[in-house]
Image 1 (cartoon, one colour):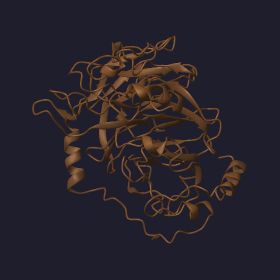
Image 2 (cartoon, one colour):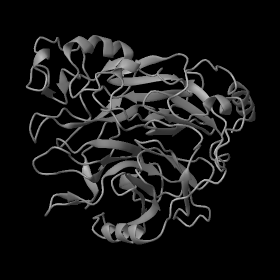
Image 3 (cartoon, one colour):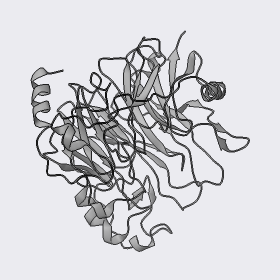
Length: 425
């Protein structure tokens, strides 16, 4: 970590006290001034053994993987969503769609977490789904309508009070009147140049005609980018997105890849789920006119858009998945432990359908990358969380994250767990 950057950030954390306080207990004003909040210093941990852990391990015996791969329980983490693996220690931070960010630690380097506890419990988080790292070790947490940045979080997470930078104050990410319980989970990534990228799902099944232009300008139904420390240089990087809840940069060509969830209410087989590739700022990915190659505008789900003009030079998905599998988190695999075919490719988590006649999804796809940087054909890498005989879920994967030892982690908000996948010849 750059020591100068750390000192500047800690000093700056005490500035900009003009943001309105959140409803309920929130001590951000104290923390920005490096003051104590009075929160109990003893943070309760989540039990890692017992009946629940045993049941999850039993369920994992149903998971089908390619030969040589093995899946095990890594940690019990309630409501586990998106993950940010720490750059310097055996720990990670895990977001949720509720009010907790979890600090998950493998203190012994055993490949199994031995401590799970809330991070910064003196703060009142609201849907802190998005977690990601800057290149010099600052943890960014993106909530429904706020962005926070935590200096050296992996080293200063033991107590309830932590240094914090308010990148975007509460109510500053989207207009408050556009806040909704629908599509409010954000994800984030930080590029090599330090710019923070945030997905902003639009809060409708299909946005109404009178919202399309405004949403395009605001970046709702798009991807924003800004300075990761003060929110400056904010701009709309990509438009024409419905609800992306997963993205990652290809380290080889620096292109940004992201998943997008499809329109509901049009039947079991349409429209497709999407995996998209952004190669430059300003691209439009078609929505709400297109969802994949399916025309949503004027369909039964968007009759009021029948006169909508097709966006110019719309970019179509690199991969179209089966409808309603709900692709969420994704990552590029750059480890060396998996066979060569997986190195440099992508793993994508499919959360599983919620309103399809016959349930589908709850699996992990693998997508190779062609020499020209485009996507190859998707294949199923891991499945078995959906019982096809009964149509019931025993788990719903959310995110995939590579570990420094070459394994990958899979989060599951339904089972409240994180799994670890390893390979041995």
